[in-house]
Image 1 (cartoon, rainbow, N blue to C red):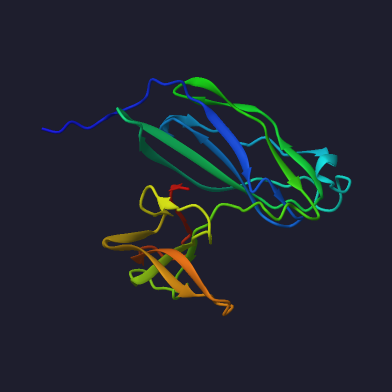
Image 2 (image 1 turned 90 degrees about the vertical axis):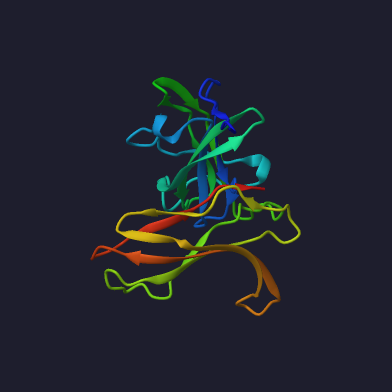
Length: 239
């Protein structure tokens, strides 16, 4: 009999937090990410996240003075999930939370350090910084994003359609592999797991400028309730 590796619940919980990408233009999106080595069900996030603070000009990056229209941007909750990562002798849980932010003012924004409860004990989430610049560094590149497509968004309850999730692969960049299958999270629908297909393809770009390598997930999606059905796609990746 082959025994399964145990899940590591004894190691001290260490949390990291960062903005991806760490600098954007006014109005562009950045994702605030929190990652920790703990089971998702053990994490107690605050009912209200700390507010971003505009801490002024980052002169080293040559930004304009902080402030302006839009004020302090709000964090919008995005996807969250858990994976188990094999570490040699055990499986280490990894939980991540994503929040989206759209800053409108130029300046340096700080999300200060705060504490959450994990396994009934306090864990510190370190401070993270976002620079909003008129001209962010050209060399930086945000992590690839999943894009969800449905052939029709006005469906009957019980009407099955194919859902397609794709993610552009970074040209001339590191190899990216999804560590776990794509998950569609939300309420009011079912996914036929027997129809799930994952592949990597090269397809023509919509703008006609050559081809683009894509990771593609396809499955049959069926809404089972009436009214507005909202869902999102998420997956863990190794880059």
